[in-house]
Length: 257
Image (cartoon, rainbow, N blue to C red):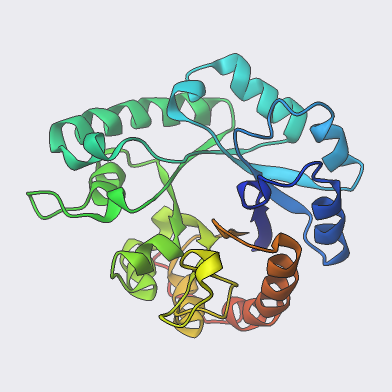
């Protein structure tokens, strides 16, 4: 299990060299890319020169159909897991369009798997809102696209009124990565716009750590949508997670075999 950082958190920082240096000093050598990184001149070199990798990348669904683009991500950044960051809420709210999306994802997953790549889905809030049938869009996608992996955003789960630990246990090995995003309580800093440094918000991280053993999570991706001070967010969150991971990793395995 490895710690990573979603680079979109630092989208307003240019160049990213100070952030990469900070991550390396604190033992984090993995990052997760987003669309703002892939065309940045020299960014792949900047990662490699620091011994860093980009094992996962958020890529819009339309771009995933471009095999040349996928190859660029693999060759330039070493990406092995391509993650769809979401689609419009209208598509997800309608079951027929959700099923059509799931069929496309199933076909795409098979094609990428043949190239040694993994396909995942990152949830926002729309995937968690029940449809008229009672099921949620994420449940529909996972059922109809059996090879699709779930990068589960814990912050969105909490904002939707769900218990992250219960969701991790229920969906088990379909969950292969987590977005480690905390949510502020009623007395949180308004400047953080509902976000919080990891371990300082309302999420029950002890319960989440215990539930990890039900999953296939191998990547923990730190994220904050509105961090006022990105370096401070990283330092404090990494310090918290260093201790948290020791207890989480030590939890007994409950995976079904």
